[in-house]
Image (cartoon, rainbow, N blue to C red):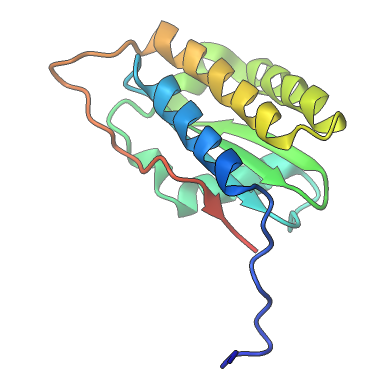
Length: 154
């Protein structure tokens, strides 16, 4: 029995296997870096520009609290077919805006072929490489500062 009939059921954008694939991609990307990667998925983007929404979500999730300010967020508005990548100031100062745009463009190539999970994994891998280059893993100081699971909005 649905006690709250006005609440819509969460849309499933990924199969359980794809969700696991995404979490594994995040964990693999983070193995060699002190940087953090998160994925946020929702149906619709409340803003015209997905990058603005990604920025809002980034701060709502407290991703600006990492020690080296090197967290990155992959943002998807699936039904609106929008995507963005947002990086905190530590990594943004190293790679710049064009890098984020290039990562999104590579993801969109997969999305156009209806390969949403593969596109996100591509983006995560690309972010991981930049994070490894600028923020390599240090066994003495590294800890997983942010959860690895996918965050689903409405």
